[in-house]
Amino acid sequence: MPSSRLTTFIIIGLILGLASGYVSYTWFPESSAEFAEMAGLLPTMFLRLIKMIIAPLVFSTLVVGIAKMGDIATVGRIGGKALGWFIFASLISLTLGLILVETLEPGKAMQLPIPESHATSGIEAGALSLQTFIAHTIPTSILDAMARNEILQIVVFSLFFGTAMAALGERSKPVIEVVDVLAHTMLKVTGYVMLFAPLAVFGALATTVAKQGLDILKVYGIFMGEFYMGLLLLWVILTLLGGVVIGPRVVRLIKRVRSPVILAFSTASSEAAYPRTLEELEKFGCSNRIASFVLPVGYSFNLDGSMMYCTFAVMFIAQVYGIEIPISQQIAMVAVLMLTSKGIAGVPRASLVVIAATLAQFGIPEAGLVLLLGIDHFLDMGRSATNVIGNSIATAVVSKWEGELGPEVIETEAPVVRQAG
Image 1 (cartoon, helix red, strand yellow):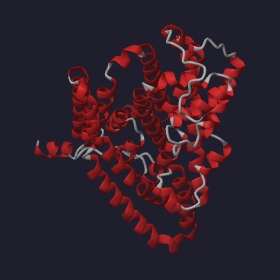
Image 2 (image 1 turned 45 degrees about the horizontal axis):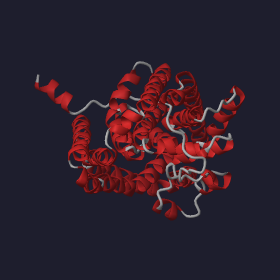
Image 3 (image 1 turned 90 degrees about the vertical axis):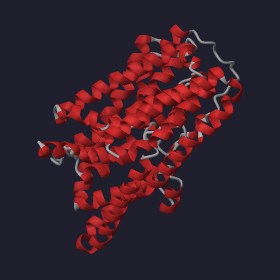
Image 4 (image 1 turned 180 degrees about the vertical axis):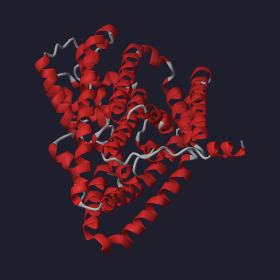
């Protein structure tokens, strides 16, 4: 299905999902729970299909991309450029969230009731540690990592495997060809899976609205409005920074990835948009070997939307409790989050885990996280879409730096029209 048609169907699914969920919650409250459960099967099936293809897709594309680079020096050079951009973008995201929440002060304006001191969020603050980070980074078995969809572990193994094949030179060509065929096969499978995306979007929105209604958006309207304004500002900043490197084409890039962005927003999962993002980046002109390397690494180290949310949420909770945090501690908080937010792709509810750990470290009552649990799904929608934007720009930037950003692939419909004329 062409990208434009899929985007249209996804938007239709989003609108119908909101409408049907609202109708169920408002007019048929006695059966809204049952409706939500049935509608929830659609995104569940879609996300399971996505998880089914993520591991072999990341492995095959990343291994082929590294193997085609030819030598370890090239891998190190590209990896260094990618990590440099990731750290730069991360610092901007964290700092922007801090500045916005301190300027707008949503916690003071909302005057929400403070949870009891003994209340808990259900999120383990101690879930993040150096030991946990290593466990989510270094695999004991690649089969186990694939079975559990530990993206960062798959990336680590693929780096070693692809580098080893590049070092073997001609002897590894037969294996490279087999893995290349696997990569193209998985991309074809991805095309089939994406046909279910509009149904998944419909089910995801219908389920959430049928359970909670739209009233929860009114209650937290100030916080959500200011947070989404911050995300839009982050989009603008990242786009301008990308434009400095790749020029006016950055606007075409944003248009090109609109389908995966909408998909990530609707399903609240940037992982669901990974296959489509990779496909659109290659159509934009990014080198296959660069995109296959930078994008999966970015999914572990470049979650711009999630990082901005971390500083925004921590300071919001502090404001609700009336806790004043001095500038020195705010700077320390940014530094801590810069480290703890890396490699969290394999941690369930990663942003909440990072926030819980940060609250405990800076003496802010962890029970304040309860305030955000009810709307976390809606916030996660914006975070996921922003993560796709950030990683798309990062991939294009590294491709440009490497001199491997080619011309954009024109949709097949356009040439047909010109020939007919």
